Length: 314
Image (tube, rainbow, N blue to C red):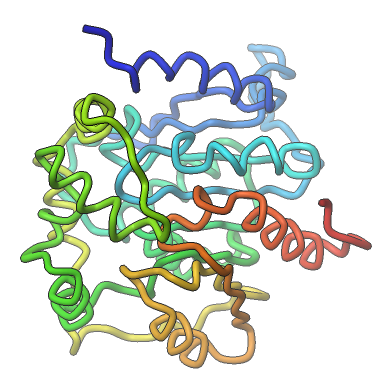
């Protein structure tokens, strides 16, 4: 029987190419490679014999996905909205979308190190990073480690670090015993439970579609389980970095049940004057998928102000 989710992938890839981004694999180091969706002109415009890195005229925006899906699935409603004014790069983090490593390191720091190396190999010198959920934690690490690369950040549904107290409080409040039970469902029931807490509005899909999504999207289960284990840090080891970025914008679904509004408001205070907060009504953790038009307006308004544009693109 045809997997309906897999059958839709060629159409999604076609839409991405129409938007001007194409897949490109970058060897980060021997044994580690990452897939990026990159502006097609950065690959196609240079003669093969030239070693010169392509110059990027548009401001660069890097979209970093969360834990349940790869890059173009996560950001499918944002990519086409941004490519007219921005050079959009969409990485697949390690163990998502074909990105792999033989390194045993499963920390967000290692993900950020690989992302940094990949972007630099692609010729990116400065960028704004947009991180969602797990990708937000990787984005924070990237910004901390590479202040010359990351000019500014937009963070949605994420936190600075997953401390053991936040982890246990969040999971207990949602009724899950572990992060793997929540984020790596093995059954239709488990996937429905994940969607019920991730989305504000109740979603209905036939069981067949749930089964197909489980089959396609939750690969590399062992490694992803290790990523979740590598995510949690002790409360005593948690620190607030002195970020050098110009601005950090927290863009939130006001009904986020996973990382609630209070966490975002507390984080804004911790980050200081450079941090700003914006909430989107009637949206949960999956704010960029539930209310893509509202999310895109907010995101483009921030990017326009950051890059000195006269007005945000509607």
